[in-house]
Length: 212
Image (cartoon, rainbow, N blue to C red; front, side, top):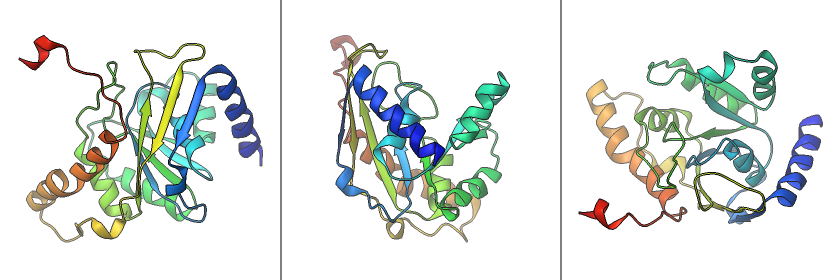
């Protein structure tokens, strides 16, 4: 109850401080739990995605966030964060992610692994595809849009929610060899995830010199 009261107050505060709009919530069922995948623009993104869905969320956060202030680490744990050491190949993350769904939470992942400063969607990490393949929940792509590198008072933020990618549409990776698994993740699972996000993001035009 405390969590939902806190989220209600946060929702009210964000609508006052920013010009905040959500599009496509019709794609989300209240009685179903999903893997939400989103582009990453700001530290506010986990809150924006949580406000776009229903119920509680678990989300991956870089390990460094848990190594500073104990109060901050305790707060983000209470909000659903669990630590991930980027590039470590820690397969326990898969089990922790699956527990989120089994325990009635949604799972939030930022496939790029880091924030984008120019608003363009970067390359997704193959580890995200592995989590999606093994957890076997429908995937909801999210596009977070705002102008500029940083948010300011009354910045316009548009959070777009795409149509679900059914878990049944993802190939079964359980019995694949390591080589086959890597190929499947890169060619069959990651593309629809990243394409789903990009379709919801207003990417800025590249400068003329960058197109050459």
